[in-house]
Image (cartoon, rainbow, N blue to C red; front, side, top):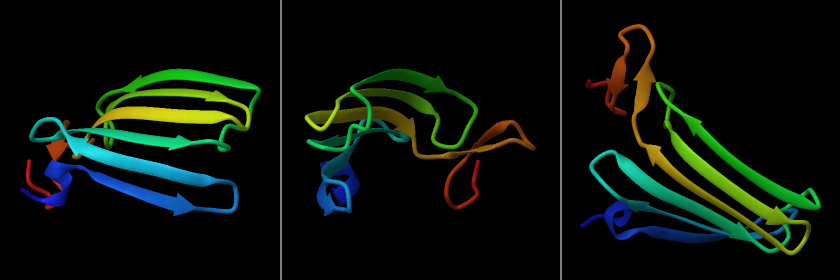
Length: 96
């Protein structure tokens, strides 16, 4: 079992805030990624739900934040890239 199958959790400090993030494998090509911070939200109230397909790392993302109190992002994404020329998925090694 490698680190991406067990899950990865890291803490990062940037100029704005301390961020905790991680990723966990759900299926062969699908992952659940998350980020959380206390002070990363830049608007009084933030909420978004986005979905994309036929794009690099396609998936769904949910973001919720309250200014300087809490910020959370959850993403379910594909770890492959979309090959626009051939209309198919490609692994990082270029294989379909």
